[in-house]
Every structure is written in structure tokens, then in C-alpha cells.
Image (tube, rainbow, N blue to C red; front, side, top):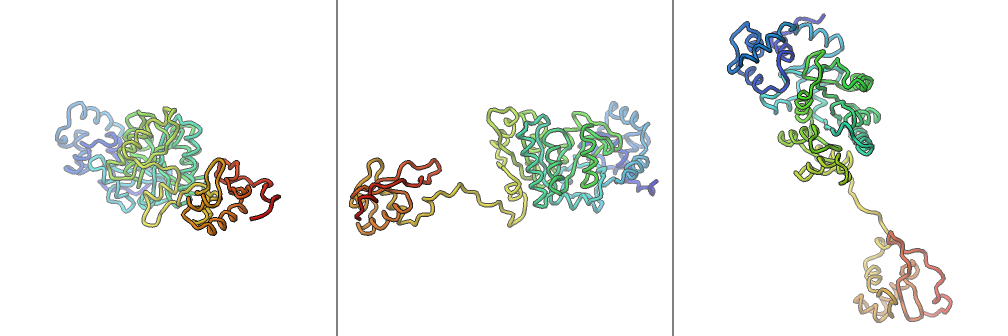
Amino acid sequence: MTAPASEDRLARAALTRLTEPGDERVGRWVQEMGAMGVVRGLTGTGPAPRGAGRERLAGCRQRAAALDPQGDLDAVAGLGGRFVCPGDQEWPGQLDDLGDARPLGLWVRGGADLRLWALRSVAVVGARACTDYGSHVASLLGAGLARLGWVVVSGAAYGVDGAAHRGALAAGGVTVAVLACGVDVPYPRGHADLLDRIVERGLVLAELPPGGHPTRSRFVLRNRVIAALTRGTVVVEAEYRSGSLVTARRARLLGRQTMGVPGPVTSGLSAGVHELLREDAALVTDADEIAELVGGIGDLAPERHGPVVARDLLAPAVAMALEAVPGGSGGDADLIARNAGLSRDQTLARLYELRSLGFVERHGDHWKLAAPPSTSGTPKPPGRRPSARRGGS
């Protein structure tokens, strides 16, 4: 059994069982009355909070019958966890950006410091019923971010969430799962082993007390924590009505980076992401581009460019001569010199260089482009040239 907790910690733990996550009215009451004052008011042992209706009070008093905040604190401690409250050294200050919707506290499992990890974290979220493409991309992003030293945060759901967590773990990195249930509830059940691995290597956290069960509304409310906790949110596959888009839009409202990975325009699972991109989210394709957006000065993605072809390596004057050779049947040295704006001698010197490289062919006094070029723009090795048999210059 753990040491008795402070009155405020006990009250906040009680409120996580009495009230629903993200209730802004409860947040205002806590600011006005203190957490213990709200508990007393909702359970009938003190003045009711201002604006609390009869139905709310009746519901809270029903829930109050099962209240045992010290028991909940003991239960999470038995799992090697803790209850982190605002004002604690481990509390992530960025959650305060949620204002009255700030969590009353977070139930946490795992040995790392939540505040420190949150300072360098990125959320990767997306569709549960994702495609192979979405799963592959999420895994690559999770692994790539982990290798760059970023903490990958997601919701431990099937699909994109699970792939992002696994990618980070496979790369030897760390990850955080934010649940819409108690930290002792393996949900989804098929991810029980994954959640155990995250507890060993990372953190699992939730607003609901031990034993809390997930509901649709709790998933939506959970998303605001993911958005506020991290430096930015990346969406990999999402339909128009997706909770992932809720997370991303909340992140944008909080001043965080919002990013999306494009997909096939024919896929309904890409439609929501593409709409997000039209709303000025940043388009990203790999971990380096994400880190450039959410990182500090110097966290730049590698420069991107297409393949280098042989003609890219020509000196400017030689390239100018090549551009001056007419297509089709070609032309003589005088015509090419006029096209290039060079003297005849300069032009001939460059044409012979181009001939040795396989870009042009000489037929007597006539010069023409070597044919056929490859699709990459690099000319194919020239065959036997008639001019080589005739000789001459």
C-alpha cells in the first residue's frame, strides 16, 4: 500500500471517476472551488458547484458509491505506475494549453519521465481499418522518427496507431500510448502484448482511473490529449469522418504542427488526409520532413532532387553546343555555330567532345543527334559511326 496522498491528489483521482474527461465545466469548477471542493459538491457533502443540474448531481452521487481514490492510487502503484497531477514536476506544461479542458490528472505506467519525453514527441495517427500502404507508411514513420530521437505518440488502436508504435519499437526507439480506458485495461484486446511492450520500453497513460472502460465519446476526448501533448500531429490515411482529423485540427488550434501523408486519390481512406492538406496542413512523406517541421534550427530534411543524367554533367559551353544541334537530320558546323552563338572552331571542338561522349554523330560535314536516347535522358552507347570509316575532320 502506498503512503497516503495529499488532499488535492485524492480529490483529482476521485474526479477522474466521478466525471468525464475534458469536461470544461468541471475544469472551471476546480479553478473556482479547488478539486476537493468540487468532489464534496458533487457528492452532496458540500455546496453544489454553480450551474450543476439535478441530473448531473444525481449521476455523480451514484458514481460516488464506488469512490475509493486511495484504492485507485494503490492499484496503479501496484502496476508500477503513478498518478501525475498539474503542479507535479513530471506534469507536461503543454497540456495547460487546453485551458479548462486540461486533464485533471493522468494515470501513467512506465518508468520514463512524461514531461521530458513530451518535449520531443510527435503524434502519428490514422485509420483503424487502414490499407497495407497506410500500415507500411506508419511503420516507416514510427521507425524513422525513433531513429532521429523523437518519441512516437499514438492511441494504440488497430491500424495506423499500432503500426506507428511497432515501427518505433522495432527501431529501438520509444513510444507513448494514450488510451481511452484505464491503463490496466488491454484495449483493444488484440494489442495486449503490444501494450505490455510499450509499458516496458515507453509509457502508457490515460485520464480514466484503473478499470475505466472505453466509449466512443472517450476516444474523441482522448484525442485532445494527443494533440496537446506533442509538438505536431501526422495523419496517415483517414476518411472524412475520422477521429484522426479531430486530433489534427485540435493540434492546429493549439498552435502545433499539422501534417498529412498523401495517398491515392481513388482511396476513400486518403480523402480526409487530402482535405486536411487543402486546409493548409503540411505535406510530409518521411521522418526527416516531419523532424524539419517540428524540430529546432538545423533539423533539416535532406535536399531532394531527381536522378542525375549524363547531360547534367556537361560543361555549360558544351551543353550549349548540344542544344544548338538541330533535331531530325541535324546540320553543318556553320549552322550549329550560329545557333550556339559560338565561333566555328569553338563549335567544332565541342562537337567532337560530344561525339566522343556519344551525344552526337558526324556524317561527313553534317552533325546530328545520336539516336535513340534512353528514357532517362542518357544517350545509348553509339554504334559504329559512318564517319569513323570515312575519316577526316
